[in-house]
Length: 104
Figure 1 (cartoon, one colour):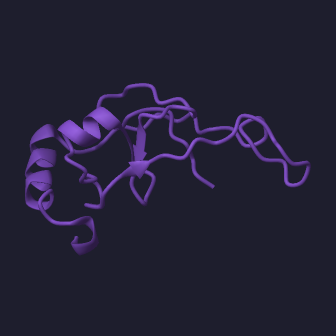
Figure 2: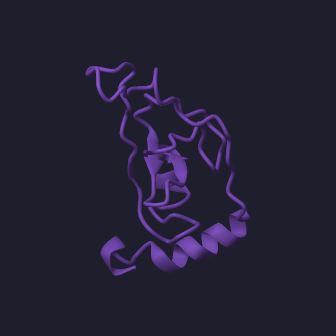
């Protein structure tokens, strides 16, 4: 189950569970669409993978079993931030942004 992290790991912008602006990599690193497009250029600074829109978890359970939805399985609340410096990210991204995600 996705953690649904609450913030952009670069700019610290709030990304609530229903945000259409949340992007994740295959390891669930979470960034806002603006940072993915302008700073990261679709390169995760941690793994080098690409990003996809984070799915939006329904607010309530629509079936009795299993009990799903945010009311039963809430989003994560621990804020995370990238451990990499702006210079390190810029260097890393410059090496990978022209490589297709399926070739990285």
